[in-house]
Image 1 (cartoon, rainbow, N blue to C red):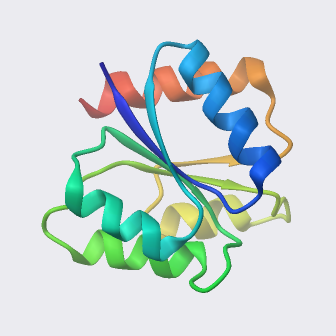
Image 2 (image 1 turned 90 degrees about the vertical axis):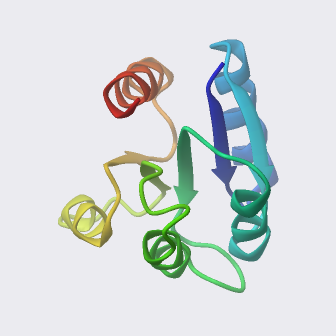
Length: 123
């Protein structure tokens, strides 16, 4: 079974994302901010991380940077999950180390396919 870490501070978005992923058969661990997420990746190996870019305390790009600098977590694929939908954001997140970008609100049809695709190609 694939383990996915979801880093999202908005409770409604977290619930929707977790419910969708669990309905697809994935095991999901939630983290409400970057500090919690960085603790979780020390405790467990994840197959994929969905990372909200706008987080309290530590923004998503800082979380991503810390994940990529750590030998234990640098190879975990990370997908940016964000309401930022300005032109060029996807390229910026990819350049920072994300493998893909999912904009909110989530399109549930393409979401399932993107998750499946990235889990299959990264494992």
